[in-house]
Image (cartoon, rainbow, N blue to C red; front, side, top):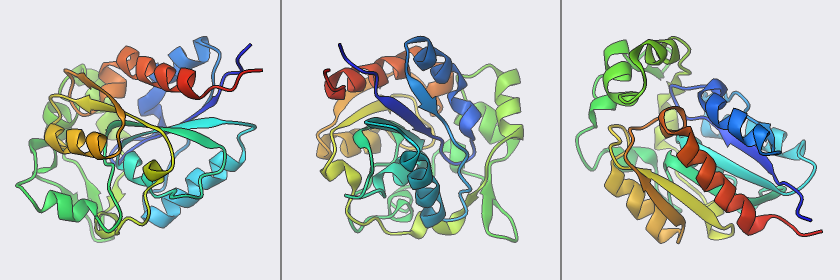
Length: 233
C-alpha cells in the first residue's frame, strides 16, 4: 500500500496562500496532507527560509509546487531540499544557475499583466487593479479577481535581480504546467524552462493563475507527480 506524500504549495508574487484554495480542497479530498504558507516576498533569501521552515515540519517525502515567482523560491532550494522528492511548476519561473528574473524580463517588453507595475517607496511592486483583473487573472470571474487583487502580496522588486545558484531541478524530478495564454510569464519562456529541466509537461489553455481558474488540471499534474514518487510500503 502506498503512503500519500505531503504537498507544500508556494504562492507567487501578487498572490497569497489562498490562491491555492481550490487545489487544496481537491488534494485534501484525495488524502494528501497539504500546507500552503504565506511568504514575505521581502527577498528571495527570506522566502527560501520560510519554505525550509515549512519543509522541516513535514513528516516524510514531500512534493513542492510553485506558481510564478514561487517557482523561483522552490528552484532556489538547490541541492539542500529536506524531504523534497519532486518539484511541480505551475506557470512559473524555472531559472538556471547564473540567471535572474530581471534578465529574462529585459529580453522583451513586459506582458500586459506587468506593464504598469507600481513600485512604492519601500521598493515593493504592486499590480494595479485593471491589469490584475484583465490580464493577471484574465480567466477568473472578475468579482473573484478583484478580491484576489485586494489581498495581493507585493514583491520586493530587488528580488528580480537576485541570481540563481544551483537549481533544485538539477537533482529532483520535475513537472511543469505551461499556461498557454499567460500574460505575465511568456508561454514560450515556460516551454524553455520545462524543456531544459526535462520536466513532464502539460499545456493548458489558461491565463497566469491556473491554480485558480483550472484547479482540476493543476490537481491532475500534482497527482501525476505523486504517483511517480510515492514510496511503497
